[in-house]
Image (cartoon, helix red, strand yellow):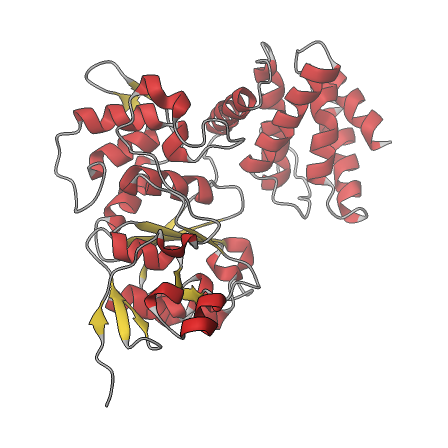
Length: 399
């Protein structure tokens, strides 16, 4: 006799065997004065819902707009959380994403429909950052995450088994280990899949039934998990990985694709780098660099010119190196320079503190990229007013 297929719920705490990359999110409405005692307060990198608990609480308290089922905030409040703004009571919401407002609005409204969201862009365009903050604002928990790699198994998206229980008692609910996606379906929350195009194609297609039918069959038990209202999924992929594991047309149709562009202007990129370096520096207890903005602007200028293949004034054509020279890499270079200035300098960010980091970011191919870098130093940096110290520092580390 065939087994009947019935909807079933998932208890994320069963067996204590929830996946290692999941966690318990703190309530969105945690008061600001208790933020230091929230989970992750001592973590090197707290989850978004912990790091920005005060802002989320302030938004929730003043958000009187309609909220989709199981959303912690309305779509308007989610967009405000990402883009920043000032609330009626004077609370300042810091920007999490600096870019076109319409992109964020489309991403948020996609999550309010039955379509999944695919964030696409070149490396370093804040895809992971945006997906984390979207999940934190919508569900109050950004930890229902599947990290895509070439070795990601089907179980990471569907479910696995506690083999001790399986061998002792056979297939049962107690032996089943839910994936982050299964938990999100059962609890009406937002799941995240990072680097979707790095996952093997046959594993990717596991998502087709989940996204189209909103069910996850468990044939071993003759049951299924049906997604409850509030469930959705955010995936990220980068343009440079096209051809690694391309999405099937059937799977791509299940997503609404939003392309995250590189910052439009140098000033916008300087603003992004400055904000993130300040956040990272405070989490690492690094002193603020009082004159760091000049070096941040210099790093951004170098990266943009080499990335675009032309100087900022449009007069000199340049060869572009093999690396992406993304905003994320600029943040890394400046953060490392800030640490050098704090621990081995006078606390002021100087050209010598960022030169080695720039060299490491630009010269990925020791043969071709080193030639491109040397040409840039001699034809552009050497002749630029006010860049003599930077030129000497770069020549020193390049020797």
